[in-house]
Length: 200
Image 1: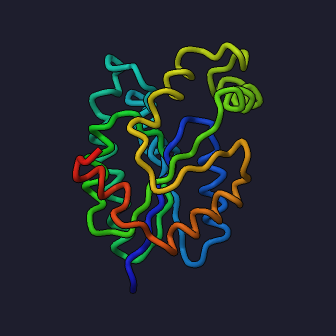
Image 2: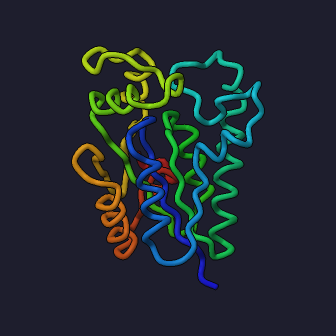
Image 3: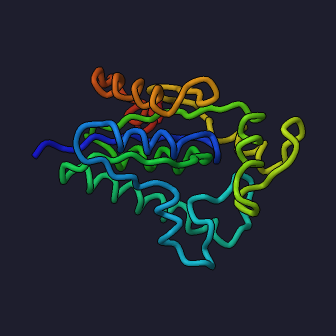
């Protein structure tokens, strides 16, 4: 069996990552599993929530010490699935460059691409406000809460991607189509290879 492919979708909460992941699972050939933040959080005990979903700028949070370990374990699992021929799509919100580089090294030698999922903060706020009560921090689109601003500012640092998509102007299916074309071309070196080599 051929090794599986890996697509990592990186962006802020409510930027549209989950919808793209679902479109990939529904439309791409072969078996695609989603090993993203929601799966990781569902396995994390309450005292360490939100696990890898921890927001930027919270170094004293009780979950902060375990976040690097949880990310390392997640990416080792992603690599193991790919080694068994399973394709993996992962939706996450990387805002720590050190952790991102460590994760990149764990994917060495595999067909893995990193996609930046972007969305203007005004649209993110509209989506947050329309979510089930208590699911996300809400507020006025023109005056978002500080945690939402931090996500928007920090999640795309250093911003090294194989592809950027904007879900405010492209549907999940269109974004998935762009990712399909990216996988067919497979850039060299990939964003993960550059990050692992600390070139950026």
